[in-house]
Image 1 (tube, rainbow, N blue to C red):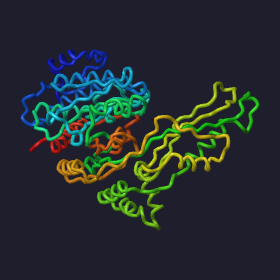
Image 2 (spheres, rainbow, N blue to C red; image 1 turned 180 degrees about the horizontal axis):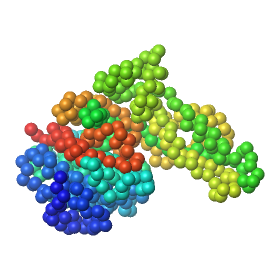
Image 3 (cartoon, rainbow, N blue to C red; image 1 turned 180 degrees about the vertical axis):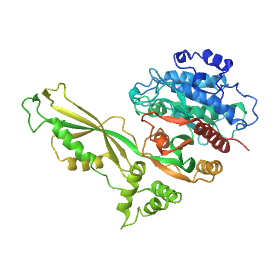
Image 4 (tube, rainbow, N blue to C red; image 1 turned 135 degrees about the vertical axis):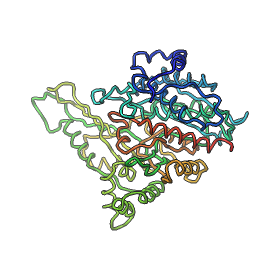
Length: 491
């Protein structure tokens, strides 16, 4: 891997005004390959994916180095950087301010003078990232450090790799002067990690006409690799619904030297212990059933046996326990989940607080309601001094994307070609994405990080030492370009 960076590429970045990168370690010192001269003369969008991948890796590095931790987000710096890349390629970007310091980016390649939103393909990714505890990382979370063939950094997988890949896709089509059969739209969103006032919900309310589409490709699914071989492709067609709920315990405040059994902290601790041990009822929808049916065909015999027994009246409950213990993600797909995530109480060590709070992050199966679940939890806790309070910006259940659409078929076809016949399985993600809001607006939205990744590296997402292998990133760009080209380019 070359250690040089082209002077021309460096000049381009400086001309874009991206001066906030000067304090970071130079890309060449990290082993980042050259940022090559844009190959505008390429006759095909797929003619030289290797060169394009090298460019995209530089974009990924520098996107990671822009700290967009949410809160507060500050995505505007990333938005301007992306807009600069698009503008230099002759693609007109538009910055859509969602809130002060927070702007989305939209750009479009047209197939004809008059757009047909029902046919358009939207490539969407978000710019914000979750926080990172520096002391728990082996590298700077915002240094975009290259080590052992991996790029490390917050957002390396979620979701700046998708941003860079989407950029590569739309730029490849532009450079090739591809004859499109539908509009292709690039969208970089804000506030995905919090789903607050600067999220895609607000963006749709204010600017839906800028990116209305019939189909979308977003994060959410994955290319699952085991022992270096792709086992299957999980294509997100549905997702669980995120709701935050506060558990609030009350009690008399007083001097800590005179303890009472009505201490709010004790009431809260007892409530959280009961909630933490609770398991909601299991039930399956079409997506989850088809996922496990397909997964059983590529799993080892022992786990496959239990996957085929999930609906059995005599062995179903045991099968659910086995599968949940084997992979927590599988367990989460089968029932509503509740994770206590935050605790707060008191102002001083010698004061008994009058109130104590815990925060629950709840993920509902599509079709389940928070009121029913909270009713069950209230009976379980059975304490008049404890109440539940639903927090703002709760998610909304959206319809499942079609498993029979032309776009779903294209992804199946490309995956079979690129991953030696690995099956594409419909997937209901335990996490929430921007796709739910798109589905509520009749978009056939699918989630797929196209980068082959192991369960171990997937577990680093939102965790410590988030990383993505360079080889996986390069392969993902190749796969994404083929999906987009197969669906949106005239043969």
